[in-house]
Length: 413
Image (cartoon, rainbow, N blue to C red):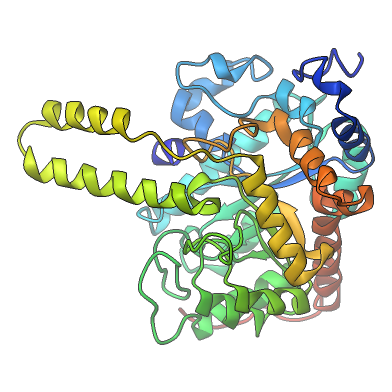
């Protein structure tokens, strides 16, 4: 995940070729997204801007085509509007290797980027705090902007920090990233006997109390089940797909899906090629293994390692991944849980590559067109595009209103 490592008319308003708009499904998709624009669960543009430009992002024209940057990006303002994006949860990501006060500092710096571009481009963005805000803002043609903290370690075991993030515009927290923290298990490490500690339960309660969505992307199946047994509000998976289609640890197992349905939660299908296509996942594993082999074989010769790796890449192109793969995950989840529990969370600008046809934020209409082509109704597609997320968010707000008189939990990590 490259950037994470670095920490007038319809034709005039879209990059879709004119002949493509003769596709009746694409025309219908545009109509769907006029009624309910896309609300995407996870985009890493803030970190990508910081990784590419540092504080120099302030001097960048964020309406210009970011595919022309030295390090091309998947997001810019013009393409957000072309993609009919009406709401976006911007990830304020900090690597799991950064912990303690340093993680809090880095999170605040990421929040500053989001609040900065929202302030710099008030005709295009507006901060949102509630589902009602999103509904109002998306009608204006702006992108309702919220934030998601992508890892529980970013609160440094402090509920006051959690509450301050919420005050600054954070509306979900992913409980872990690629490592366990003190109170919840990541999907990327071996399971522990207690996947959610007593303090972790207190974190969930406080998130429910303040109206912050619990995001179960990145966590282990054990933690998923434990949280679903504790939370009073619907959960989301901001960028995960179906393990029943691609057996990747970042996806949601089939035995968890009935629990998500009962909870009223939403799984927001992601675009990450290795998460959604088993052949691509195997290719990534083989490439990783080859890289390790070459590092050991040519331990003192990085240039030779690089040349050999380039040769391997040339001989072993990645398997194709396309819109159909994403739609397959949507279909699996809809079959298991019903139409009310699926959304979209592309993880754009947090990944090195995308499915063909979904190369940037301008391409969401193409995905909706594929779902229509498969027989989903326009009402179904409105739910997937954003309606389901709004329903879950409203339910979480109702829980928070009911808990308004409660005292925050006093539990130590």
